[in-house]
Image (cartoon, rainbow, N blue to C red):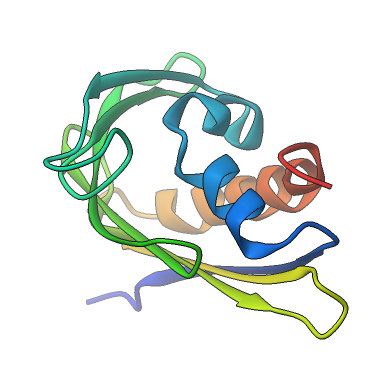
Length: 141
């Protein structure tokens, strides 16, 4: 069995955690982060972007897949899973926000997944790392 692929990106924002959390938790904002079409399918159980909220993501010519928010701790943590579609298996994402001494935010973003298609997971991992690293600064200052 191949080792699961991990994407790990850190980024420092000058904005405080509440601003960064609001930007990351809003599904539609992720279109610019992933360079993909993102559509909100369902609001969360108790808040718009909270636990239970679902988004559809379409990357280029690939079929769309759905991600569901499974943890949403305001201003500190977002976790999600692919819950429908995708050639990826065991896909999860964790975004941890930590306040910095200067009033900004340190983001630690990790994504894990595998694929039954040989060689696909490393290709997807490289593409995600590149897109996320390049586009994070567009979400919030």
